[in-house]
Length: 81
Picture 1: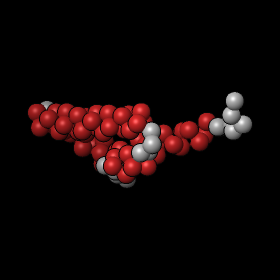
Picture 2: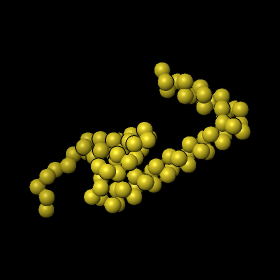
Picture 3: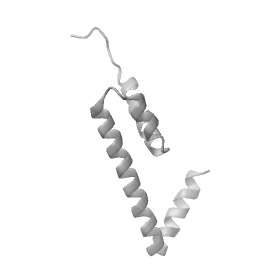
Picture 4: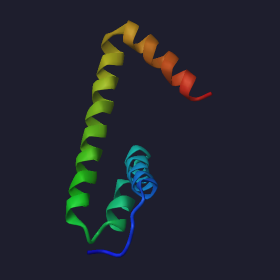
């Protein structure tokens, strides 16, 4: 049994940093950092695929639905403050 104690804060920070890297388009950097863990690499690749899928869906909704576009633009403006 391991002598090390992993606190929840460390795991949370690790997960946030992975999500942040994928969200900012730095997936390759995250994959290189985790080159010795193929399972986490699979998860990161899946996250990147889902991010691209969501971006495509949002872009098509914005093009088709003016109400969605207005709501999205309002939300985006609020986040950038």
